[in-house]
Image 1 (cartoon, one colour):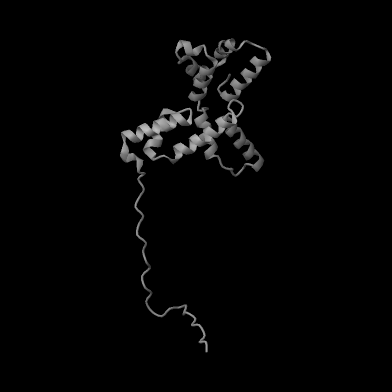
Image 2 (image 1 turned 90 degrees about the vertical axis):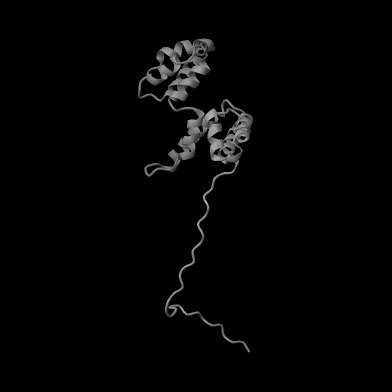
Length: 191
């Protein structure tokens, strides 16, 4: 792995190679760790000794450290726009790749994908303070998010009301001085 490598693509390529070589799953992490460099290596070595032996824990720590977590992918997906030099096909492909990284349909069932989308919308619809509290705790499912939100609202009942600015009163334009440049047409008199 080099500094220019996309860590997510590197790990996926490693997993494809390990699977093709039919390595036992428990040996993958032992073979992967010496190949990591920089921030990825620091993230793997920063785990407790027991977690360093678990392939999923190492992969999650490395991806989180380098901004490739599911939450980061969701944020990139929601912020993506067609840029000036992009073609619609490339933009659509980029969106598809980001959505797959965020929702992980290869790993999750259809119900799991739906729950991810509902979880995002649930947190988005909460009052700002409660939403920040829930995001900070990174719930992995909707039930966890609901529990966090209910606990926060129980502790801070005033935060349930979203603070919205008071709209400014509507101003009426001042009356025009002088003759009206656009006189009203009077309807014809009917017999």
